[in-house]
Structure formats: C-alpha cells, structure tokens
Length: 100
Image 1 (tube, one colour):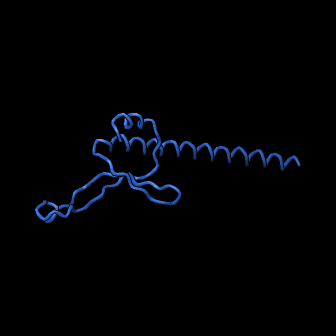
Image 2 (cartoon, rainbow, N blue to C red):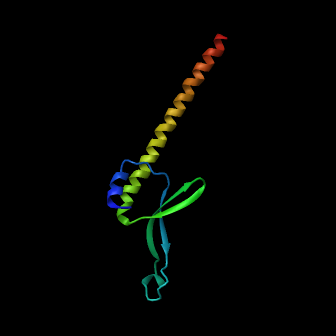
Image 3 (cartoon, rainbow, N blue to C red):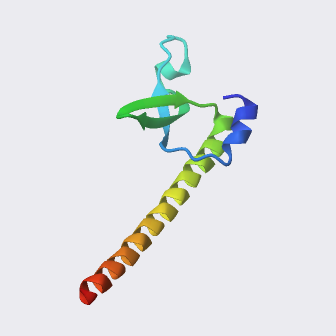
C-alpha cells in the first residue's frame, strides 16, 4: 500500500485479522538460522470462503488496526439495530394477533 492509500484507509472498514508471519530466510549465516525467525505483520481475510494474506509494513499496522476496529464497531451497531428491529416486529405481530 502506498502512503496515500493508507491515509485514505483510516475511515474504511476492514474485515479480517492482524497476524504475524514467522519464517527463516534460508541463509546459513543469518541470525534466524539458529535463533528467532524473521517476522512480518500481515492481514488475513477471506473472500468467498478463500483465505488471503496481505503482508504489511510495520508502519501500516496502526492504520490497519484502526480499520479493523472500525469494522467491529460498525458490526456491533448493525447487530443492535437488527435486534431492535426484531423486537419492534415481534411487538407489532403480537398486537396484530391479539386484535385478530
């Protein structure tokens, strides 16, 4: 992602999970050969049942985290509205049944 596109993400909703990929690079002289593997932040998400992984720069993480949080907040608000709608519909149906 470019810096410009990341700035526009701040108001966007992202569904998925922020994960950390761990791997060894394969170079025999690298510190990862005997120690901790390299780590890379990534966004894991699914589309039509297929999981995708988008690797990120460390500088992308705060913006992606905010977009993931935006999604959670929006989903919770939508759930509240749906439950409220069910409650109103239930009351209306029960009143109509009593009148019938």
